[in-house]
View 1 (spheres, rainbow, N blue to C red):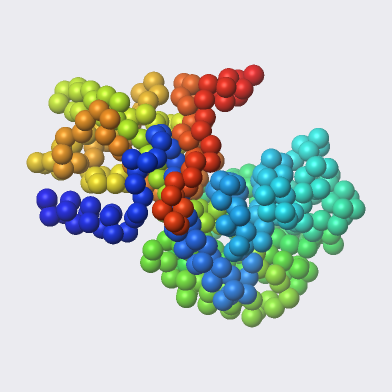
View 2: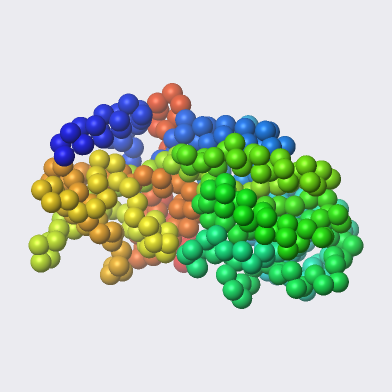
Length: 394
């Protein structure tokens, strides 16, 4: 077992140059080198397949990194007015917009930020189509192929009775003339074969409408930057689709793939408590506040230097969050040495769909934001204090 830890730490030091002692805690740290590696992969897939890949801000909105992101992708997709404004201000380009529903008070500002807008229903389309056409915005509709690839219902847009998108039965009379595109989204961190199956279901259900379109948006959930993802297969699937429909512009909008495995949440041990022989190391971050998907999905995050399960003969601890929520903890991790108050606990893969979902429940401060640059320096983007919490309540 000691051999395992020796190899683990050797791998860590060989593959990372981050000195976490130089990083304030708690802090989210994105690694520039890993971000660029993901962006290179995304750019390669887009160019090889002849498609456009844009960033979904709902998954990754750390905008101080966008000068880097803009070197590889042109624009972003937004699901709200705030995201649309962020796209325009940080990318200098109008956004592809899809909202579950749009308030009449927001439509004019949304359209000012939009190159494309996808409506979730015919009623929203009828209400706002004239304004969209007057502003020269390309109009689309979201569809639901009713094909399941996501097993966790919380993340499955194609679940029965879903409120997201129109099923094929809604198109018995074809498409309104104003519609230029169809948008689907039915994946969550899936591989290329799931993407192929979803695309086949989309084509089977809605292919008869394609001749009337200019573009299709295949949504997100394509985890093309995950190790072992079959990019060659995915490129071949996209190229075959484009060969069948050469008049269509094909758009993809992953969020998680951009920031997958690019960074960390650095925390430290504040206390160690014991109950019935189970030790819990309480850290200065919270799963419910700062890592909500761990409880919602749920999944167990990796910790540098730890095995994510109980191991006899090692030092086993639950990791407890700082909030008073009873379930704000993760079950046992095994460490080689006993933990001490002040020890750093570094959670891996804590950038995508994490920073964008944080809260200040219990008044717990938001972790700082920063980047470990390609020249092995830490750059602090922002820290948070009492005024940030107070202003959220005012």
